[in-house]
Image (cartoon, rainbow, N blue to C red; front, side):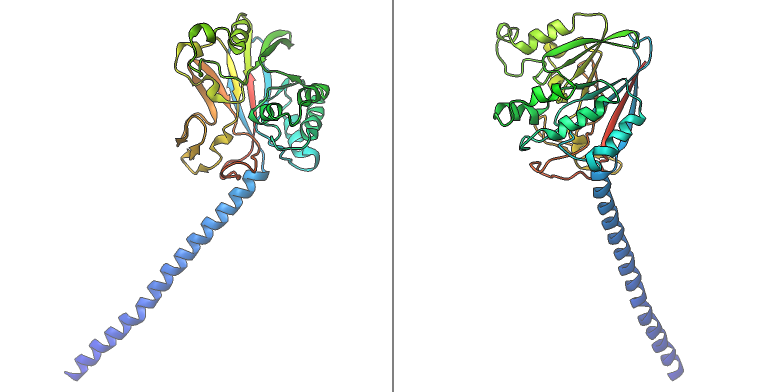
Length: 312
């Protein structure tokens, strides 16, 4: 009998000794998980600030006879990739673009000077012609009279400044109409139809769309064409846009977490990639930078993007 009791005691002792091992395993697994998440988060923040990727799109049109390569740069926010932006310039040059488009927010509204963008344009001009359309930060500079010579400086650096203006250019012996628009392309103010049709943006778009050649529009904000009403359905072949920073924070396997624009949207759709708004094809760049006035002034799981579009 005593022998049996001793066996039971020994069994209990054995079981007791096993329990700490299980706890240790769980603790180790938890620590490994936490460490993995921390490393992933740190690496993601680092890459989202310094790495450059090239997102490529192909767009076919019966108005294009010879392939045309377009580079779109959005939302730089005065961010430098290497000294004098050498890494960015080198990556753009590798793509062998026919034209380069800067679709706004190249600088910050609080910058004291515009040497960042003028220096960048001069370097890009050695690669291909540059076309510049303003974003809300450039517009804010104008409205607050912080730097009234910005447009003049951009054009003196070599770029063509486009806002409610367009130009018919020749690329590989074919015509392309390239325009720029910062304002909304529809009656967002809710004025009467008669008043709306007197707006400079409406008159510009009516004039702009009157052609049979390929029409390329540079518009910083994708929501400029978001309205579902008929007055937003312009005859435009392709819009290049930015503004959304790809949602700023992107979750693995899900995408953008939130957009503070368009009224504030969780898990938004229209923040990056190829989209169609009211029948208008659009390529929205995730952009290249961010700024300190942002609610979350960091990019996460969101690699800075050069957007490359092949017209065919």
